[in-house]
Amino acid sequence: MYAAPELNGVIPGPLERSEGESDERYAQRSALFSEFLNIPDAD
Amino acid sequence: MSIVEGAFVKVLFPTHEKPREPGLLHICYCLGVAPPVALVAYTATTFWPADLPVPPGIRIFGRQEAATLNQAPFVLHLNRLAKIALTERWLPDLYRPGQGVVCIAPPQLRDELFQASQELMRRRRELTQKLGIP
Image (tube, rainbow over all chains, first blue to last red; front, top):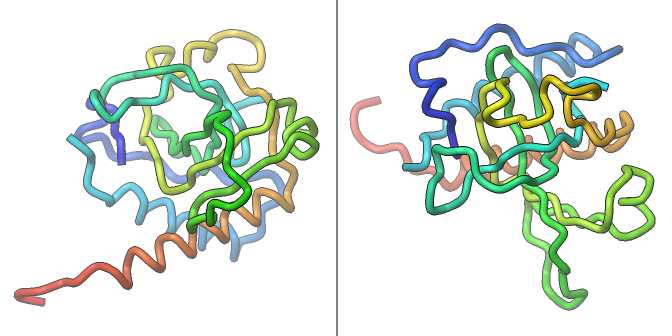
């Protein structure tokens, strides 16, 4: 994962919901998004 | 158009050499936005030989499909991601009309790419060995 250094220590806000996105899909996508963000940064 | 899930947007995607700095201009696929963060996947207009197996996380867009997305043929790499800040430093057209968004993927394609991303993460979990104290 490449990561912007200015985001170090920054806690992102809630994932923006896509237009017309169901609650179930949004929940799944939020979980996946969090997992992606937890991948260690490349140095 | 704005930067949302499914947007193909112009990003200064980092390079292997400088993974934490804005790099070369690429049209990237936006997997999601959680201000001030956006998660984007790399694309390139490289040719993918027909006899080369397509690994998980790679999605090839031929001429016809790419044209419907206002692009030349390209390859999307869902296994090459960048966590970028929603700033002009990473998104050079952020404050121009359209914010550098080339097009928005239709819902069916967004779903396909979301499922492919889920599959990638599932494989990653399977390949990861966690040792030591639980």
